[in-house]
Image (tube, rainbow, N blue to C red; front, side):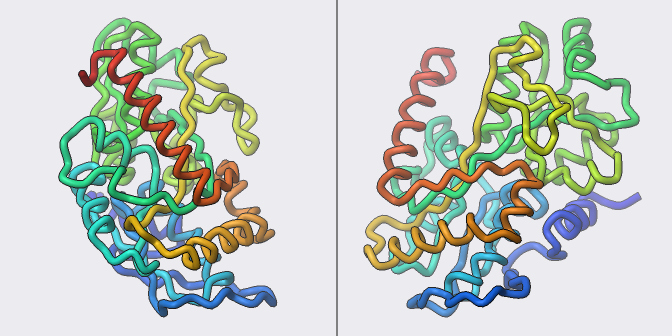
Amino acid sequence: MIDKREFMLRSAALAAGLALPGPVRAAAPAAPAVQALAYPHRVVTVVTHSSPGAGSDVLLREMLKYLQRYINATFIVENDEGGSGAKAVARVSSARPDGSMFYATSPTYILTSLLSSPTRTYRDLEPLVNFFNDSEILYTRSNGPYKTLEDVMNRARATRGRWGAANPASQERQAGEQLKVAAKVKGAVVSHEGGGDLMINVLNGTLDMGVGEVQEIRSQLAANKVIMLATFNPERMIGYPNVPTVKELGYDVTVVKFRGLAGPKGMPPEIIRIWEEAAQKILADPEYKAMYTRDNLAPNYLPHAEYGAFVNKFAADTTAYLKATGVIR
Protein backbone atom coordinates (compact mmCIF):
# COMPACT_ATOMS: atom_id res chain seq x y z
CA MET A 1 0.00 0.00 0.00
CA ILE A 2 1.45 3.39 -0.95
CA ASP A 3 1.56 6.23 1.58
CA LYS A 4 -0.15 9.57 1.05
CA ARG A 5 2.92 11.44 -0.18
CA GLU A 6 3.75 8.77 -2.77
CA PHE A 7 0.15 8.74 -3.97
CA MET A 8 0.18 12.53 -4.47
CA LEU A 9 3.40 12.37 -6.43
CA ARG A 10 2.10 9.56 -8.65
CA SER A 11 -1.10 11.52 -9.26
CA ALA A 12 0.85 14.57 -10.30
CA ALA A 13 3.09 12.51 -12.55
CA LEU A 14 0.27 10.69 -14.29
CA ALA A 15 -1.89 13.78 -14.72
CA ALA A 16 0.70 16.39 -15.58
CA GLY A 17 3.73 14.52 -16.80
CA LEU A 18 5.83 15.88 -13.92
CA ALA A 19 7.03 13.76 -11.04
CA LEU A 20 8.12 16.12 -8.31
CA PRO A 21 6.52 19.07 -6.51
CA GLY A 22 8.20 22.38 -5.73
CA PRO A 23 10.38 24.33 -8.17
CA VAL A 24 10.14 22.52 -11.49
CA ARG A 25 11.06 23.76 -14.92
CA ALA A 26 8.14 23.29 -17.30
CA ALA A 27 9.50 21.33 -20.26
CA ALA A 28 8.02 22.69 -23.49
CA PRO A 29 6.62 20.27 -26.09
CA ALA A 30 8.07 20.35 -29.57
CA ALA A 31 7.36 23.91 -30.63
CA PRO A 32 5.77 24.97 -33.91
CA ALA A 33 7.47 27.60 -36.04
CA VAL A 34 6.48 30.66 -34.02
CA GLN A 35 8.41 33.66 -32.76
CA ALA A 36 8.23 33.84 -28.97
CA LEU A 37 7.57 37.29 -27.55
CA ALA A 38 10.60 38.97 -25.99
CA TYR A 39 10.39 39.18 -22.21
CA PRO A 40 12.48 41.17 -19.71
CA HIS A 41 13.12 38.20 -17.41
CA ARG A 42 14.82 34.91 -18.18
CA VAL A 43 12.95 33.07 -15.40
CA VAL A 44 9.34 33.65 -14.32
CA THR A 45 7.91 32.08 -11.15
CA VAL A 46 4.23 31.19 -11.01
CA VAL A 47 2.99 30.41 -7.51
CA THR A 48 0.03 28.17 -6.73
CA HIS A 49 -1.50 27.51 -3.33
CA SER A 50 -2.43 23.98 -4.47
CA SER A 51 -0.64 20.83 -3.45
CA PRO A 52 1.05 18.62 -6.07
CA GLY A 53 -1.50 16.72 -8.12
CA ALA A 54 -4.40 19.04 -7.27
CA GLY A 55 -6.44 20.55 -10.09
CA SER A 56 -4.80 23.98 -10.04
CA ASP A 57 -1.33 22.47 -9.95
CA VAL A 58 -1.98 20.10 -12.86
CA LEU A 59 -3.63 22.77 -15.01
CA LEU A 60 -0.85 25.27 -14.36
CA ARG A 61 2.01 22.92 -15.19
CA GLU A 62 0.41 21.83 -18.45
CA MET A 63 -0.41 25.38 -19.51
CA LEU A 64 3.08 26.73 -18.83
CA LYS A 65 4.69 24.01 -20.95
CA TYR A 66 2.87 25.43 -23.97
CA LEU A 67 3.20 29.04 -22.93
CA GLN A 68 6.95 28.79 -23.43
CA ARG A 69 6.23 28.65 -27.15
CA TYR A 70 4.91 32.19 -27.01
CA ILE A 71 6.90 33.97 -24.27
CA ASN A 72 10.67 33.76 -24.34
CA ALA A 73 11.19 32.79 -20.70
CA THR A 74 11.53 29.73 -18.50
CA PHE A 75 8.53 29.19 -16.21
CA ILE A 76 8.93 27.78 -12.73
CA VAL A 77 5.94 26.44 -10.79
CA GLU A 78 6.15 26.66 -7.00
CA ASN A 79 3.62 25.12 -4.61
CA ASP A 80 3.28 27.52 -1.67
CA GLU A 81 0.68 25.78 0.44
CA GLY A 82 -0.89 27.03 3.65
CA GLY A 83 -3.75 29.15 4.87
CA SER A 84 -6.08 28.21 2.00
CA GLY A 85 -4.06 30.40 -0.35
CA ALA A 86 -3.28 33.18 2.12
CA LYS A 87 0.43 32.33 2.22
CA ALA A 88 0.79 32.35 -1.56
CA VAL A 89 -1.17 35.60 -1.93
CA ALA A 90 0.99 37.31 0.69
CA ARG A 91 4.15 36.17 -1.05
CA VAL A 92 3.17 37.33 -4.53
CA SER A 93 1.62 40.62 -3.40
CA SER A 94 4.93 41.48 -1.70
CA ALA A 95 7.03 40.75 -4.81
CA ARG A 96 8.32 43.35 -7.24
CA PRO A 97 5.69 44.25 -9.87
CA ASP A 98 8.11 43.64 -12.71
CA GLY A 99 6.60 40.54 -14.31
CA SER A 100 8.91 38.02 -12.64
CA MET A 101 6.31 36.48 -10.30
CA PHE A 102 2.60 35.72 -10.61
CA TYR A 103 -0.13 33.92 -8.70
CA ALA A 104 -2.45 31.31 -10.24
CA THR A 105 -5.93 32.64 -9.54
CA SER A 106 -9.16 30.78 -8.85
CA PRO A 107 -12.14 31.59 -6.62
CA THR A 108 -10.18 30.28 -3.62
CA TYR A 109 -8.15 33.46 -3.24
CA ILE A 110 -11.32 35.53 -3.00
CA LEU A 111 -13.10 33.12 -0.66
CA THR A 112 -10.09 33.00 1.65
CA SER A 113 -10.10 36.79 1.81
CA LEU A 114 -13.81 36.86 2.70
CA LEU A 115 -13.94 33.93 5.12
CA SER A 116 -10.86 34.77 7.19
CA SER A 117 -8.68 37.73 8.05
CA PRO A 118 -5.41 37.26 6.16
CA THR A 119 -2.81 40.02 6.22
CA ARG A 120 -3.02 40.24 2.41
CA THR A 121 -6.19 39.66 0.39
CA TYR A 122 -7.26 39.47 -3.25
CA ARG A 123 -7.36 43.27 -3.20
CA ASP A 124 -3.57 43.33 -2.82
CA LEU A 125 -3.10 41.55 -6.16
CA GLU A 126 -3.70 42.93 -9.64
CA PRO A 127 -5.63 40.56 -11.94
CA LEU A 128 -3.61 40.02 -15.12
CA VAL A 129 -5.62 37.83 -17.54
CA ASN A 130 -8.11 34.99 -17.31
CA PHE A 131 -7.66 31.85 -19.40
CA PHE A 132 -10.46 29.39 -18.59
CA ASN A 133 -13.67 28.48 -16.91
CA ASP A 134 -13.26 25.10 -15.23
CA SER A 135 -15.74 22.29 -14.58
CA GLU A 136 -16.50 21.32 -10.99
CA ILE A 137 -17.57 17.70 -10.67
CA LEU A 138 -18.77 15.19 -8.08
CA TYR A 139 -17.14 11.76 -8.11
CA THR A 140 -16.99 8.53 -6.12
CA ARG A 141 -15.05 5.25 -6.17
CA SER A 142 -16.20 2.88 -8.87
CA ASN A 143 -16.20 -0.18 -6.59
CA GLY A 144 -18.27 1.50 -3.91
CA PRO A 145 -21.99 1.37 -3.12
CA TYR A 146 -22.91 4.54 -5.05
CA LYS A 147 -23.58 4.66 -8.78
CA THR A 148 -25.57 7.89 -9.01
CA LEU A 149 -25.76 11.17 -7.13
CA GLU A 150 -29.17 10.12 -5.83
CA ASP A 151 -27.54 7.10 -4.19
CA VAL A 152 -25.27 9.47 -2.25
CA MET A 153 -28.22 11.70 -1.37
CA ASN A 154 -30.23 8.75 -0.11
CA ARG A 155 -27.44 7.88 2.31
CA ALA A 156 -27.31 11.50 3.48
CA ARG A 157 -31.08 11.41 4.06
CA ALA A 158 -30.82 8.20 6.09
CA THR A 159 -27.71 9.10 8.05
CA ARG A 160 -24.92 11.68 8.01
CA GLY A 161 -23.26 11.89 4.61
CA ARG A 162 -19.48 12.15 4.23
CA TRP A 163 -18.35 14.37 1.40
CA GLY A 164 -14.91 15.78 0.66
CA ALA A 165 -13.58 18.97 -0.88
CA ALA A 166 -10.37 20.95 -1.08
CA ASN A 167 -9.27 23.53 1.50
CA PRO A 168 -11.88 25.28 3.68
CA ALA A 169 -12.05 28.40 1.52
CA SER A 170 -12.23 26.59 -1.81
CA GLN A 171 -15.08 26.91 -4.26
CA GLU A 172 -15.41 23.11 -4.12
CA ARG A 173 -16.14 23.35 -0.39
CA GLN A 174 -18.71 26.08 -1.00
CA ALA A 175 -20.33 24.03 -3.78
CA GLY A 176 -20.63 21.06 -1.43
CA GLU A 177 -22.20 23.21 1.26
CA GLN A 178 -24.66 24.71 -1.24
CA LEU A 179 -25.62 21.25 -2.47
CA LYS A 180 -26.24 20.08 1.09
CA VAL A 181 -28.63 22.99 1.68
CA ALA A 182 -30.38 22.58 -1.69
CA ALA A 183 -30.90 18.85 -1.11
CA LYS A 184 -31.97 19.35 2.52
CA VAL A 185 -29.72 16.52 3.68
CA LYS A 186 -27.32 15.95 6.53
CA GLY A 187 -23.69 15.85 5.52
CA ALA A 188 -20.22 16.77 6.64
CA VAL A 189 -18.16 18.46 3.91
CA VAL A 190 -14.62 17.60 4.99
CA SER A 191 -11.82 19.92 3.88
CA HIS A 192 -8.44 18.76 2.56
CA GLU A 193 -5.26 20.57 1.64
CA GLY A 194 -5.38 19.29 -1.93
CA GLY A 195 -6.71 16.82 -4.45
CA GLY A 196 -4.26 14.06 -3.49
CA ASP A 197 -5.48 13.87 0.12
CA LEU A 198 -9.06 14.03 -1.07
CA MET A 199 -8.63 11.24 -3.62
CA ILE A 200 -7.15 8.88 -1.03
CA ASN A 201 -10.19 9.28 1.20
CA VAL A 202 -12.61 8.76 -1.68
CA LEU A 203 -10.81 5.61 -2.85
CA ASN A 204 -10.57 4.05 0.62
CA GLY A 205 -14.26 4.65 1.34
CA THR A 206 -13.78 7.22 4.10
CA LEU A 207 -15.80 9.64 1.96
CA ASP A 208 -18.99 8.95 0.02
CA MET A 209 -17.93 11.38 -2.70
CA GLY A 210 -15.55 14.18 -3.52
CA VAL A 211 -15.89 17.56 -5.21
CA GLY A 212 -13.10 18.35 -7.66
CA GLU A 213 -12.06 18.93 -11.25
CA VAL A 214 -11.65 16.58 -14.19
CA GLN A 215 -7.90 17.11 -14.52
CA GLU A 216 -7.16 16.09 -10.94
CA ILE A 217 -9.06 12.79 -11.23
CA ARG A 218 -8.00 12.06 -14.82
CA SER A 219 -5.64 9.16 -14.11
CA GLN A 220 -8.05 7.45 -11.69
CA LEU A 221 -10.90 7.99 -14.14
CA ALA A 222 -8.91 6.39 -16.97
CA ALA A 223 -8.07 3.45 -14.70
CA ASN A 224 -11.76 3.02 -13.79
CA LYS A 225 -11.01 3.71 -10.15
CA VAL A 226 -13.59 6.50 -9.92
CA ILE A 227 -16.79 7.50 -11.68
CA MET A 228 -18.28 10.96 -12.13
CA LEU A 229 -21.73 11.46 -10.66
CA ALA A 230 -22.58 14.98 -11.82
CA THR A 231 -21.18 18.38 -12.75
CA PHE A 232 -21.98 21.75 -11.23
CA ASN A 233 -21.76 23.31 -14.71
CA PRO A 234 -24.84 25.10 -16.06
CA GLU A 235 -24.77 22.64 -19.00
CA ARG A 236 -23.39 19.14 -19.47
CA MET A 237 -19.69 18.87 -20.22
CA ILE A 238 -18.83 18.47 -23.90
CA GLY A 239 -16.30 15.73 -23.20
CA TYR A 240 -18.65 13.80 -20.90
CA PRO A 241 -22.17 14.26 -22.28
CA ASN A 242 -23.55 11.36 -20.23
CA VAL A 243 -22.68 13.03 -16.92
CA PRO A 244 -25.74 14.99 -15.74
CA THR A 245 -25.68 18.45 -14.20
CA VAL A 246 -26.53 18.87 -10.54
CA LYS A 247 -29.33 21.21 -11.53
CA GLU A 248 -31.03 18.79 -13.93
CA LEU A 249 -31.00 16.21 -11.14
CA GLY A 250 -33.19 18.55 -9.13
CA TYR A 251 -30.73 20.57 -7.03
CA ASP A 252 -30.53 24.24 -7.94
CA VAL A 253 -26.77 24.72 -7.63
CA THR A 254 -24.46 25.83 -10.45
CA VAL A 255 -20.79 26.70 -10.08
CA VAL A 256 -18.25 27.91 -12.62
CA LYS A 257 -14.59 28.18 -11.65
CA PHE A 258 -12.35 30.77 -13.28
CA ARG A 259 -8.63 30.21 -13.94
CA GLY A 260 -6.22 33.07 -14.52
CA LEU A 261 -3.17 34.90 -13.27
CA ALA A 262 -2.58 37.89 -11.01
CA GLY A 263 0.54 39.79 -10.02
CA PRO A 264 1.69 42.43 -7.58
CA LYS A 265 -0.04 45.78 -7.96
CA GLY A 266 1.59 48.25 -10.32
CA MET A 267 2.66 45.96 -13.17
CA PRO A 268 3.94 48.00 -16.15
CA PRO A 269 1.76 48.23 -19.29
CA GLU A 270 4.36 46.48 -21.46
CA ILE A 271 4.21 43.36 -19.25
CA ILE A 272 0.43 43.35 -19.36
CA ARG A 273 0.49 43.70 -23.16
CA ILE A 274 2.81 40.69 -23.57
CA TRP A 275 0.59 38.49 -21.43
CA GLU A 276 -2.59 39.57 -23.19
CA GLU A 277 -1.05 38.68 -26.55
CA ALA A 278 0.40 35.38 -25.33
CA ALA A 279 -2.85 34.32 -23.65
CA GLN A 280 -4.76 34.58 -26.91
CA LYS A 281 -2.05 32.68 -28.78
CA ILE A 282 -1.89 29.77 -26.35
CA LEU A 283 -5.67 29.36 -26.32
CA ALA A 284 -5.59 29.11 -30.12
CA ASP A 285 -2.69 26.61 -30.16
CA PRO A 286 -4.17 23.45 -31.76
CA GLU A 287 -2.13 21.02 -29.68
CA TYR A 288 -2.90 22.72 -26.40
CA LYS A 289 -6.54 23.18 -27.40
CA ALA A 290 -6.91 19.43 -27.81
CA MET A 291 -5.48 18.94 -24.34
CA TYR A 292 -7.60 21.49 -22.52
CA THR A 293 -10.73 20.42 -24.37
CA ARG A 294 -10.10 16.89 -23.12
CA ASP A 295 -10.11 18.27 -19.58
CA ASN A 296 -13.36 20.19 -20.16
CA LEU A 297 -11.69 23.55 -19.70
CA ALA A 298 -13.71 26.21 -21.51
CA PRO A 299 -11.56 29.03 -22.90
CA ASN A 300 -12.69 32.33 -21.42
CA TYR A 301 -10.05 34.90 -22.25
CA LEU A 302 -10.45 38.13 -20.31
CA PRO A 303 -7.87 40.89 -20.86
CA HIS A 304 -6.43 42.86 -17.97
CA ALA A 305 -9.16 45.51 -17.71
CA GLU A 306 -12.03 43.05 -18.04
CA TYR A 307 -10.49 40.54 -15.66
CA GLY A 308 -10.14 43.15 -12.92
CA ALA A 309 -13.79 44.09 -13.29
CA PHE A 310 -14.78 40.39 -13.32
CA VAL A 311 -12.88 39.67 -10.09
CA ASN A 312 -14.47 42.65 -8.34
CA LYS A 313 -17.96 41.58 -9.39
CA PHE A 314 -17.30 37.96 -8.38
CA ALA A 315 -16.14 39.17 -4.96
CA ALA A 316 -19.20 41.42 -4.55
CA ASP A 317 -21.62 38.65 -5.57
CA THR A 318 -19.90 36.13 -3.30
CA THR A 319 -19.96 38.56 -0.38
CA ALA A 320 -23.70 39.09 -0.86
CA TYR A 321 -24.29 35.31 -0.94
CA LEU A 322 -22.20 34.63 2.16
CA LYS A 323 -24.02 37.39 4.07
CA ALA A 324 -27.44 36.20 2.92
CA THR A 325 -26.70 32.68 4.15
CA GLY A 326 -25.25 33.88 7.46
CA VAL A 327 -21.73 32.62 6.78
CA ILE A 328 -20.28 36.10 7.28
CA ARG A 329 -21.72 39.30 8.70
